[in-house]
Length: 127
Image (tube, rainbow, N blue to C red):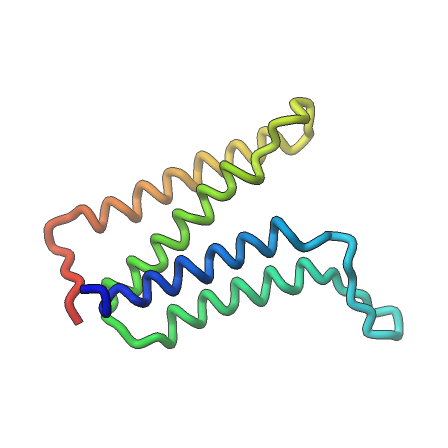
């Protein structure tokens, strides 16, 4: 069973690294390409990380149920990181407080819906 779930474990590691990009890269770093083209380094790394997670799940050969499980676990970790690390707690008068709360609740509903599929009786994690 562990060999079949290696895709899920890899997805967990990639998602944790992706969250670390949000937490530990300074937003003041920029890449200057010249000719007035400036790109935020943190934004670039976050987009590349998301692309790597998506391509990992597309091109790593496994059954569709294990691919769905890997994406569901990645989605759940990203949602929990939103709640733990990114929800504003110090500034109660933030203009985006309600927006973040709304999308956190909607994201939680999405997490519940995708996990319901795995609690159904017809799911098999066989190759």
